[in-house]
Length: 204
Picture 1 (tube, rainbow, N blue to C red):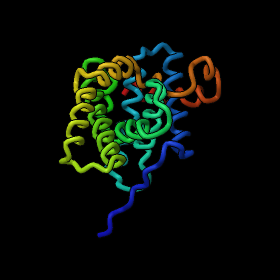
Picture 2 (cartoon, one colour):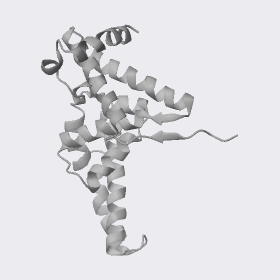
Picture 3 (cartoon, rainbow, N blue to C red):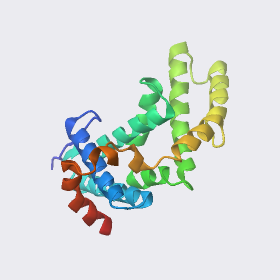
């Protein structure tokens, strides 16, 4: 039996952008109606969990979940001040590969550091691989080992990268990454259209 194909959408795909904007409108509606940031965050995760389940169960169509995670990764890279290029691609691919459980942890103060440490490991491995290729060094070469050890010390738990990145990322709420603040949406057609769905989902 031939398995169905899943189309992984890039973050710039119009369908991803529309879903991202619609989610932002729904969250703005919740904020305007007095829901707390915690409730707004939970709403976002509930919506993402439904999208993830749809991808896993249907095994067809397109992977909107991964596209939306890439959008979130782009926003996190902006918060970190990471320009377009190698490092930004690593961060984007790492976050895009997270399941909903790990994505939740990334935005929970008590657990966020664990995921950022994994991100540090991904960045570190990619940097070592890039340096080896650019310098033409073999994995067992003395310089490769020395460079790898020097880089690892900066990306381990408690190291400079993880410490600084955690200070920034762990203060971010996922609902804050979404477009369309209340001031620009309140009273608009987007908020009115989103209101019934947002209210219904938050009560579930």
